Length: 142
Ligand SMILES: [Zn+2]
Image (tube, rainbow, N blue to C red):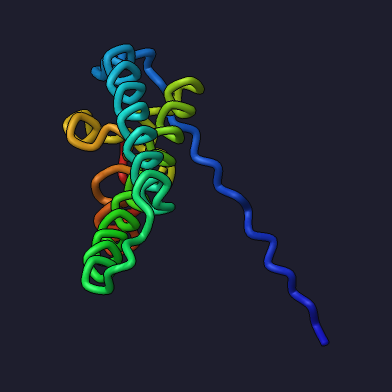
């Protein structure tokens, strides 16, 4: 059995950085993300406190209970989405701190500034976010 281990040479593409200044005001972004993080933390903790019925125990009345459980579904969704967004915000803050905030985590290209403005915690450029492999343009120059 011939074992032909395909030694695939890792073609490490080294992007040349011309020392250009980024258009993204990272200070403002950090500020915005920190505020957002506080909001989300508060929302997530309020929703989960309500879910545990700390201040509002389940009613003895069955019809009331139905309403409360419906409310719980909504609270659960709020808490879940707040926590998901919170993780994205925290990841974005880490990327800001390491200077990789504007770099797409998938293809390594710069993320469009207008995209970052719209979705400040995104970690991928528009084409990667929109399905990635579909638009796998080879030899794209930066
Ligand atoms: Zn990308």
